[in-house]
Image 1 (cartoon, rainbow, N blue to C red):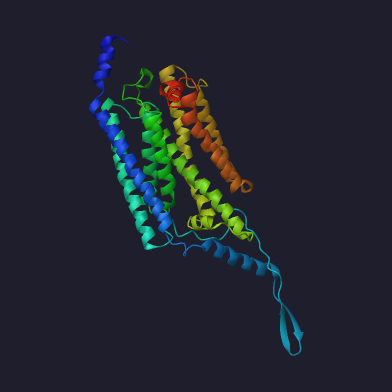
Image 2: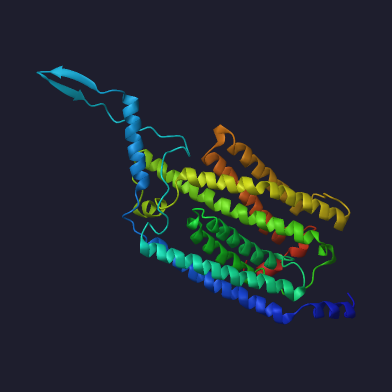
Length: 379
């Protein structure tokens, strides 16, 4: 690069806006931290006396099924009276995801105090989202391009979109406030990784990225990842809740902490349905993302597919989610088996997100922070 070209690139970067963006990202992290503690308070101060619906429902269901299994009571005439011979109780465990269990009261446990902290947490999350979105916007304005040209920018945009998806579901009056605590936790971890390990100074793009496909392909990849993340959280919580319900159905007694936390969540069937729906809804868009990337590769590198590591893992992720959706629609793979497959699929997406860019060399190495950068911070 000539001196004149380097000077022109430097002039194209607005350092003031870049610094404003950094300040906004750190400010958003501070507010997300407050939201995290507010969600903790929501769980702590929510009433524990109003939980126990799962146990009550399963006990009633077990007794009902026991009576149906036993049939009518056996009567024996004796000395002018009628004696009823009681049959032993029969507990029948329903198929996974098909138990008639009501959703829990939520993290607040149905109390005004817990609900107040929950509303404060959501308000803080909205504020943090607005601040972080401002940080992403000023980052884009500082270089006059899409704000996802490297791993740092991808991270801050991804977390913004993930929070946006959560808030949109709340706006649509969906019962997803249980997502608040895991969301705030992972967003803080992701932003911490972004500002410490993955940070890249605001700069111009390499020539291969100067295309309108940058706006189309990468934006859809970010949105798909955010929705896949929401589905993965639902799947993980489903596995915990399903184990909890199974233990109660078999007559076991879960620990006090497990009962207090898991009984406030939606029923396992509700969590399973939620995870399946969000993954199924975004899968066509992930298919489009891969197609758009192939078209862009044809424009930039003269070939649509070259078995680059990023291309390969994007396809592996597509295959994994396709297998999950197919298995989920098959009766023999509903429930926990399908849930494990969903987590494998999301693991493929995570490796494509982090592992390929950081540890694998390829055509997409322009987004690589490099092993040297990781080693310099102790990785």
